[in-house]
Length: 244
Image 1 (spheres, rainbow, N blue to C red):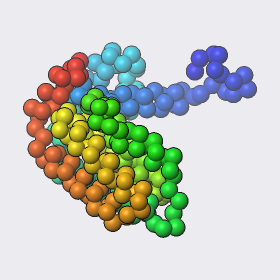
Image 2: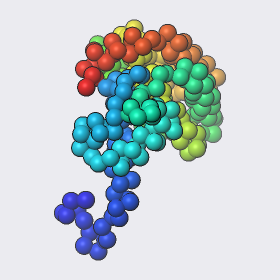
Image 3: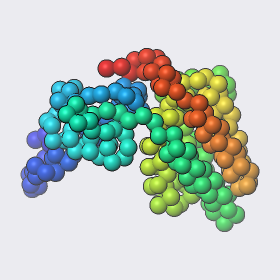
Image 4: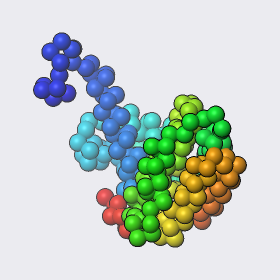
């Protein structure tokens, strides 16, 4: 912690705490590298290479990698470093199924007659997704981020903190797949249209319609996941300059 920010009455953080904090930073950076195609399935690297690239010591790097290993992103190779694991499409299918349950449940709750909808939130989402065609973004990274925020906002607005927590975890775990989806311009255009209809149904308190539209929207994305190939991943890396 910089001296200027340290309270004179607070003891400095312990070494263990500092390592945990740095490990969290490394963990977050490596997950961004995966989401931004800087690390793709099959890539191999060593802990020393990460230490040099990120400018950190080996301990936080190892802690971050063990955490990513537990989450199924990487595996350790005997005497030859680490490898980014291939996509587990069966797991993605299950995560999309879970996402569908959470989001359709949230849609019904948002439309309950005795529930007050956060109109400021809906207005903010409408500014993005109900914008005229000539004002819509074509930036894949921006749209992917807005897409995540749209779905997370709906679940959080439903008022169940545990549902929102699980949904955020699912969102993180399918992030790379969603980013690939938005490398295709027709998918960006379809997302604008579908999000707009979902918002309109929620504003009108039509829970069944909103849930039906969300289900169809997620099922379409789920179907696109099944078409993904490793070749598409490398194309996305080249297109975004993700190769390191």
